[in-house]
Image (tube, rainbow, N blue to C red; front, side, top):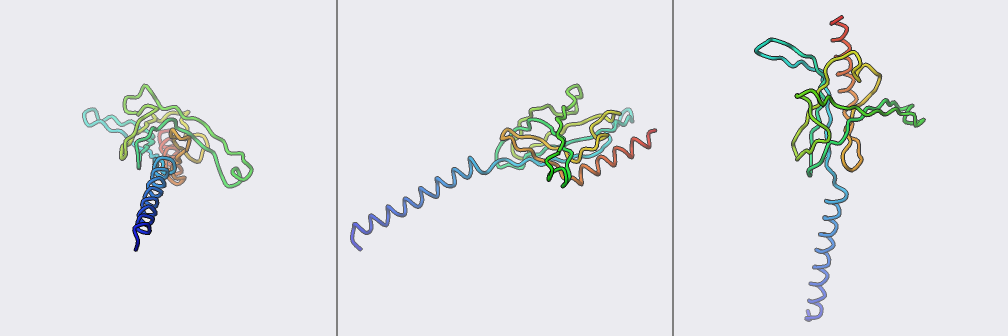
Length: 167
C-alpha cells in the first residue's frame, strides 16, 4: 500500500467519524426531545394531628428525559375517533390553584427524574364534572403530553362516585 492510498484511507475514516459525530449532534439537539409523563388520580390528604381529610384530584407531571425541560400549561381535551376524523375536538386550558400551598406552579422547570404535582380541591365546578377525555401538559417545544385515557376515566369515575357519596 502506497502512502497516497494510506492517506486516502485515513481521510475517508476521518470523514466517516465526522459525519457520525454531526449526525449524533443533530439527533441529540434537534430530534431527541424530553418526554413528560402525565398521570391523574383521586386522593385524600390526611393530617395526622387533626384527623382532617381533604379530597383532592392530583395531576402529576414527571420528566423522563433525556434533558431538562419545563411544564408550561395544563390542557384538557374532549376527543373520540369521530371527533378526530371530523376535526371537532374540544380543547381547554386548566389553570392550577395558585393559592393552594400543596399545588405546583406553572411554569415549572423539571430536571430529568423530577416531578411536579398539581392539586385541585373537590368542588362543584371542577374540570372532572365536564365530559373531557384527557388532560395533558405542554412543553416549550409546543408538544402536548397527554395522560392515558384509562387514568382519566378512573379519576373521573372516582370523583363522581365520591361526590355522590357525599350528597
